[in-house]
Length: 484
Image 1 (spheres, helix red, strand yellow):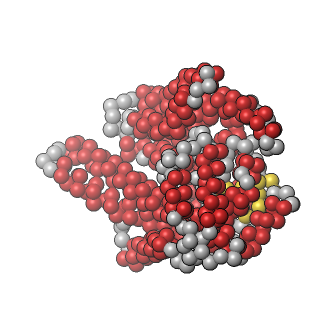
Image 2 (cartoon, one colour):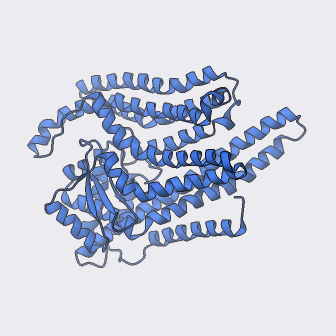
Image 3 (cartoon, rainbow, N blue to C red):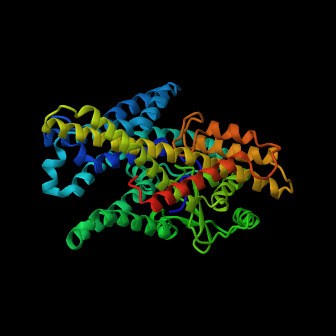
């Protein structure tokens, strides 16, 4: 799959945080069978708690939205800030609801009726509906903000988008914010379950192995076809011929990187984001959202393009797969002894039923540790990869000026691009991001590059160390046949 989150794209719903929350919610749904019985709740109570999650988000957001509109009438932004802050954290509130629901008797009482996949889909759907509720709550404030800036945009000669209806706004946000996150999570899962079902029918002794390779096959298919799927999924259109396209194509040629197409992502100005997709030269393409092209000066658009090219030049896409696999391998290595130690310490002297409960708790400790360690390790690696792409952008722009060191102008272009993305996405520059780091963190680093030669920098050595360490972990695991 192509890199699709390369410029810290966060809408009022905070896309970066939503991605992490959706991974957690899907993990809770998948672990519902193991979580079942931890809390003394029947299936209907558990289902009610799961359904209450999106309802709570809708009601709380509606109240905050009304307060925000009233505050805007008084020219105050405090209530609006509270709404956006709640929207950014609502996904974690939902995750808590789903965790409580999964700990009841939901899975054992419903799985025999709708199957394990049905329970997983039900819980995950509650999280998706909550995301739609976040968009619904943000619409009145977004509409007011747009209406208040129309005259200013016209005076400045900028593009003016029609204010969408609530339904159109929710659909646009879901298409821009949810689909790129949900599809990469769901497709490998579906392929995994399909392979598991077939294995149970024809080779039950290898069912778990088939499930693993089914997930790998799903991820591979998605990885190879993403340059074809994404334009259809997001309704991309080709960047028109003209000075801007010529400029960006020259930049790709200067970087010696083949790009088959440059797409415009139509979001009605709702999202400032960019991505490079496709591993192979003939399929590789770059996607720039309309907000970037319409609201950012040419120097900053050029910097965004250079950042995307940096992911190709530094081969981040194939190496990211290695890093992901290594992170989960390390997480498994850390989790199993912790879970075993918990069981051995607590199960001594207990009867069989108590030991079963302790085994369940140990399993949850194991799974929770895998999730925490795996996501933390991947987040650390991803943030350094983003930093390396920022560095490459500065070096490429400086080299076009005929300089062998990072120039202040190229640094200012990249720093300004990051600042513009944060502004357009209503994202505080100080807000941390799991995959990208905060905008302030990235900008401060970029400013330190002024005058630095174009040779290998500390960030290049760090990313190289991450790559080869990850590869070593996988090689050792395969060679030794470890159960990590």
